[in-house]
Length: 305
Image 1 (cartoon, helix red, strand yellow):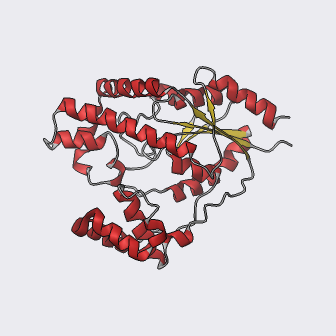
Image 2 (cartoon, helix red, strand yellow):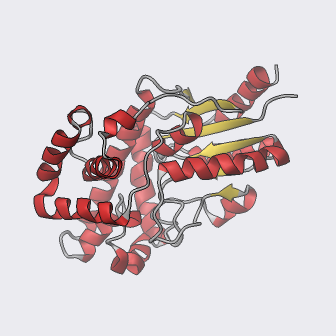
Image 3 (cartoon, helix red, strand yellow):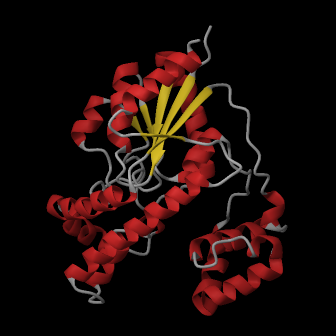
């Protein structure tokens, strides 16, 4: 009996992942698991570029719009939830499609992530106080003391990554780096991992046009509706940051939209860098115009041989 399998469709934002994943899932008669750390939250589909109601009607999706904005979620919880769901999907279809660009979520499914302690409210509050009182430089100085090995590898310009490392150090009582195994787990299903690839200029043009379409679809109004909740981590992301700055009077509308497009392009570059890094399960890059057929050929040749 053939092993169940998962097709992972990833790539940079605006590369066309959703269309490819839906086409593949329709052909295989299976369901889609979203791997997007923001689309999982309810009430913000425009700014997070979530699948449209029409797309959701074509193929059943999981982890889209299922959490309230104030819910805490993590890649570790995502791995737990997905690995619990997959056996049900395999019973029904024998396979599933995972689609998204949150690379930690992708890695959680394909390779597993390190087993880390759950952060208590008191530890999270302590780290927030440190960030508020001493800023990023102070937090980095503390991390250098608690975990000098990880302090030299962390993205030192990313406050969330630094804060997360401090939380782990404080909660576990040991250096974060000592808990990071970076090993690949053995899954009881086969995996085909592809990344939708577009020329850089074409990708950036799609990002620019997506921003304008999001505005036309009501992004500004959506952001204004959640503006009172702007302190929540679920809204600490590209799109809302620029809109909230506009509402605060820190930039005009045109500047905010231009900044949103620029920051989205920067995020896309980071996604591409992540995909290219060594030491993980590599993705095979596919042309969006032929991606669905290419993937189906991979399934036929590699998994049904």
